[in-house]
Image (spheres, rainbow, N blue to C red):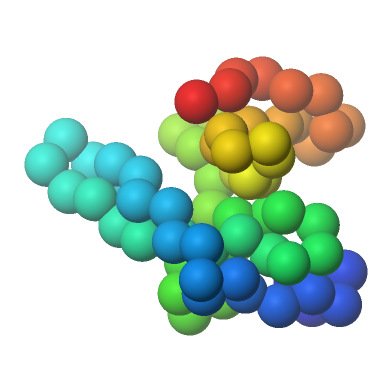
Length: 71
């Protein structure tokens, strides 16, 4: 968000599993699609890949922007 100038899309919550028994709500950036916690902290998967919301799917990309997984 701070890097791209976008803001959190609070109208589009994304619920994701964050541990064996817990879920958390995340929000995509309105400009770049990067997924964030409600406090603005960026979301990553266990492998450290950045999470994005693209075409209705959560997409994890490595540091080079290469897609590693699609949920």
